[in-house]
Length: 324
Image 1 (cartoon, rainbow, N blue to C red):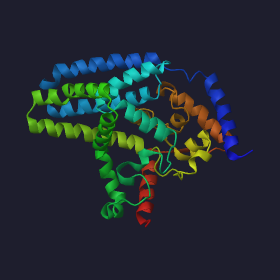
Image 2: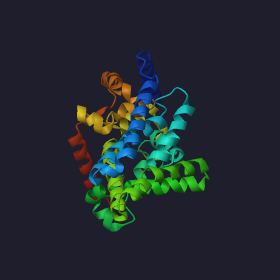
Image 3: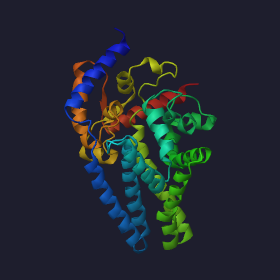
């Protein structure tokens, strides 16, 4: 039996164990609870935005947007409802109207290109963002390539703006008028309210601060998941079993209570990539099962502390910097 068949067999066994634990069931009540909370938070936003100090406004909307990012991510993975059309409906609202990105574009980029071809140097667009910032390939800019190990941390903070550009390029190219209409509502929720409440310069600086804070938070949540892990040559990726590919290319960050909340449980990246539709409500229980199964069957399972993950990333960038 070749390696792919062996891993396929392992995955079949693991899936049966997980299914028998009822962890593959969607969690609609968890979503309904979040929906009620966020309706209330937006009501408070509309009620008090002009009465709060601008720094409190920035922090408030930064926290709100980060939470929405993770909820929207879960909707795209169909974690909340058994009916995928319901997940898609709510994802249109959260992505386009509340985050200002295209839901259909993110589904293609994240679910198809990233999750299906994780760390493939051609197929996975996540690792090719910003002119190969997440790969060992040389940047078009020699200056950036030379100083990649330092500039990497700056560039990831403004990646959100690149995502917005690519997102609306997708909307316009594919004539997605509903998504465009929903996106226009976003301006009435955040920029317009700020413009009506504060001076123009303060509003512009506040918007920039919110976007940068949101993406720095998300970048630290996302980048520790795959950088340093194996990068798969594009013409080899289909030779790997799903189970083998995900364990080779994903890293877990050992959980403390605060890490779980900051990462919204995506620090359990191995489990999330093997079973992307499993709700984060069940991810810690799932993690115990997957970790034990991998250890018992000598399957790669990379699990490190947050600071060790940053150290691995730094050392990897340092290595990439010397490749010419």
